[in-house]
Length: 422
Ligand code: EPZ
Image 1 (tube, rainbow, N blue to C red):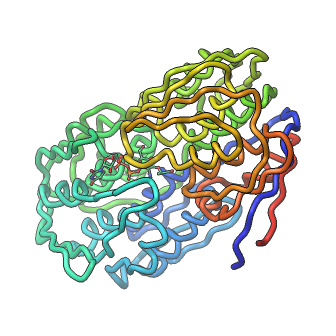
Image 2 (image 1 turned 135 degrees about the vertical axis):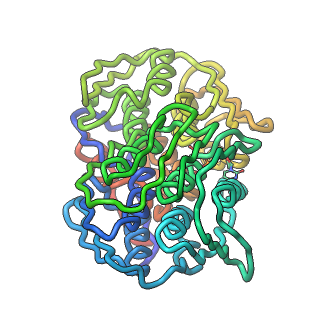
């Protein structure tokens, strides 16, 4: 497929209603965990994204029968035919590593390509491996592949805290594997992101016994069989957050539907400090941007702290908020790549170690920009929407990995954005 780009004419007022899609980062592990059972699994509210398509391709390769239409995904894996996740698929999407836990649980063996680093810094998976080893898996690494075997998985107490704290991915992978272990597995400290909770709720709906999800201690009682299930994926809090920031930046008036405002508390707290106002419903959220905006200091932290997946978009926003703001990124080492591109639009940003210092300018001006990773790409689009003149964002395939119908949704709010082939 030819490379694509967005062409944006900035300065259009955003107003209206937008429907939030299902969460990418819970859909991916839930699709992988669907191969735990030989019964039929039906997932609703599955976002149609490149990453989701890649995960579907992977479980089909493993032997699952799959049908995906209108955001409903049906998965049936009576037999697992292969136990390997090839390099060609894993290199496209790191989250392929979720089949490791599922295959070890169901087949007692897995052969998964080692994911590399990525644009946002080194992304080790040592904690996933450590956790699986602790419950009885033997792991060796050869020829760029992780070879995992388990004669019998045994529940026990698992501590998979790393230098950066808990890991979302490792918590989920061990939780998935532990559903088939003999005895009780206790993961502590566990990550408590809403996506971890969603996977746990899915596993329980399938007949597993997981408790404590949403806290820092997760308890899994192993079971030998599982049932089929109909399950609905939670709304994507990062997509919702991205639209909320767009509205605040644009001084717009936007209402989100089918969202979970309770998952956005830290993001909304920061936006409130900048002056934006909200009307919070049960699954709706209206945001009205403020005329006069105030600078803020953001500290990224695991949930319920401020999400790393939202800091790029806030950097774009804060670059036009008068005064000096800061963002301290504590989770990934190299996640300020949007800064240099924003500076090409006139933003004044300096990076000192893990902290970005942003001096607000009156306005950004349109430029030709290169997207680097998913959330950084979103940040550049947000900047283009408020900039004077035309902005071109190149390499938007990053964005297509994680935002469903992004430009259509923005256009429905009044944005001038179109997709072109390069
Ligand atoms: C998930 O990544 C998300 N991805 C990321 O979203 C998100 O930024 C991240 O959680 C943090 O919230 C998916 O869910 C698919 P971690 P994950 O393991 O699970 C270190 C997006 O844009 N670590 O919680 O990979 C790691 O390097 C993506 O949608 C180890 O040291 O994140 C990081 O510093 C980007 N060893 C920290 O822990 C390990 O074995 C937290 O990472 C695993 C992680």
